[in-house]
Length: 571
Image (cartoon, rainbow, N blue to C red; front, side):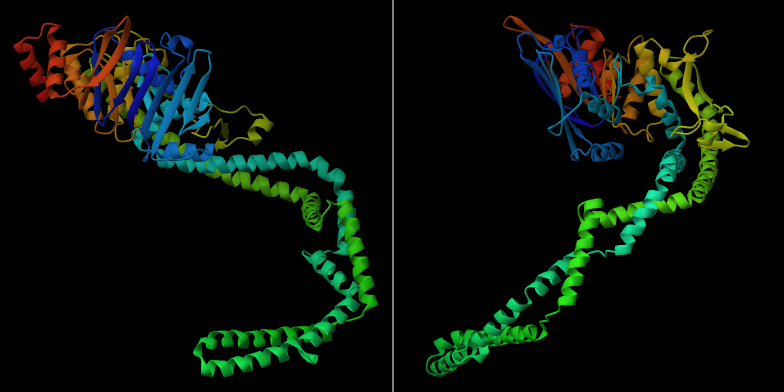
């Protein structure tokens, strides 16, 4: 839901801050007061094209900022993971437009391209009126609305898992076919290189061990002399460290018997005696194992020399040599068994194609079963909203693939003997058709001209899909165009019911709709000095009654209109 909207220096707005609430938020105001400017600013925040004409005269830049509560929006969270954006339960979006024509966009204070705002907008808001974020006017969303109506998301997810697996297999097949020629051409070279490396047969970590051994063998004499000297200093000599420490320890023991303050230092000295003894034992053992082995020294030098040659030819380090050996080994094995590998991939593709086809067919059949029910439900709901002669139809088609070997090879779905075009959403092309006037033929819904009709059609669909629909915020800018009286009450009732499942922001001129508000805002145009500014304020109950009464009777508010307003609000 939209928690907070801030607009600065946009059109007639100098600065406004709006705190929206859950449920039904109604915005009213005189014609020309600037109600739609607020919706325009919200749409700007969601990625619509910006121009410097939107900036308030005299300002350097316009800024629109919105705070959305998104803790339960799973699709949005997935998008954030894919885009490596920081996720918070509150989403802060900011858009700035400067007089120099620059547009900057931020998500949680991180700069993003405007295209990201468009994607976010499609996951946050359905905005109905003369705006871009109308899911109903994007044909690609129609199949999702049908699936949500029938609760088919689980079936679609199963199909998509299989579709994604098919995509991976086709990618593997393409890679293999592209590598075939290269592998065949380089097979002999790989075989030679494998023999060369395996003749030396370097082991992981061997070079480091041999280099250490080489240092020891080359310095055997020095090591022998030095350890022998150390042994004399520590233990064997007349004034050895060990003997001196023993004497010191004994004297400290005598002193500790007289004064206990020497006890701690005496224990430290005893520990030192033990440490020196351990050092002496290690040096003695090391000295006894020192070898003068010219043959081993020569072997180690030769082996390290072989390693040097390999490193020069195959990567500069033994890690690179071993990695290259693994790589060409796999490539050589693949070249040797290419036909078998190809056969295995084709087998996997046919197995997965069978699964994918079964799931696509099941999803398509379930969609077809839903169509009559949805057609009837939409027409019934539209009749309640004043479009009584509407015809609504969901068109669903599939497209067969031509019998071309190349295309058939990469087909995802085969039903019977026929192959079908498929996308990640199935094999069905789905589009809504409607006629709102008697005698008029059904037309694609995306070609419906009337903003008010589109808004009511969407209201009907959203009412039917209320629990299934995932978009948290619905905005209706022109839903009351061309209606009044009884129909207005029906529209208000539908909005109220829909607001149990979605946050709704609606602009209206009709008292019957305004009376249904959970939260009511009034937009006013004021003169401040020599400038005109648009303001918005949240109304308390008494102000709500007066605003609804004004919508009923005009500027002159009577006691009768006040009473009627109270009754509308309480009904």
